[in-house]
Length: 80
Image (tube, rainbow, N blue to C red; front, side, top):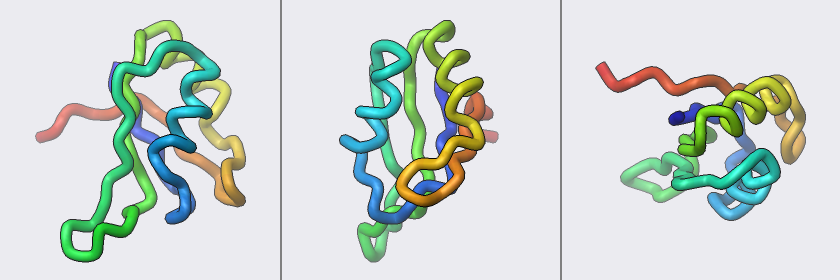
């Protein structure tokens, strides 16, 4: 399952997010979206993991505080 993780602090790196998500199961990919021009984080990312682990991560992390910000964690919608 592909998970959207939003409202991240701009200081959060992929390794930080990976560490949090790995507590719920094996992560196959973790990417924080960056601005093409500046290379700075846009404050959101995507994590891919097994469905059961992803569901547990969504339930427990949505609304949780991470690096001073309240995360939005939900199933990612496919690109239109």
